[in-house]
Image (cartoon, rainbow, N blue to C red):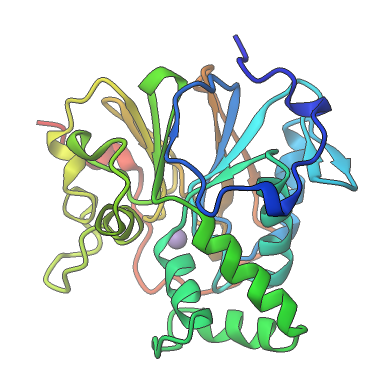
Length: 280
Ligand code: MN
């Protein structure tokens, strides 16, 4: 049962009335949700996915589901794709109108740090995102910074049954709202000694995860989103020319749209499926 059925008709919340940071804890919301994988500036594909999911354009808040479905972005809105300004503007508008949720990915946090004046290296697509935003009025950059700063590191939904975090999150950290937990959820394990082709080590929490909550994440491109116990990676590498994928909750169906083209070259081979992660 959708516990937030008044959402589509609710008046817009004035920006000055919004909390500075959105709460991790959204257990009172049971959806239905459309959880959306890494977008990376692929605005056209995001719009195509909304259309595929039956959403209608809403001049006020971006895209609306007539069925009251709520989009939840797993993060990495920016870098490598063709329209990072457009994606951030759309997702920011939807989140600020309480029409969507978003958690930050490592690329988003790097951009947030750049916008805040930190000397982060302009690598891995960030150079393109910065160039795009530098061509915009300063207000666009300050709005983007305020937006990313408002995002908690992960969300807990549906009475605790659903957790969304960019790299996933081990059970003892579900609901923990600290800067350290936000960083871990966005970046995951950051160790050059780890073979990036090995998802079990890129997402080491998966192998031992026995939690009751379903954990939905992105971060590592896979050819097919596949379940590993109660966890699923829904990053199907849209920016690398594959697909933008969403997971429907509570239905647990998958809906994808193809990338119009490859916007970036994957330095590493795609994994055949996240199901290759050992569960023992
Ligand atoms: Mn990503």
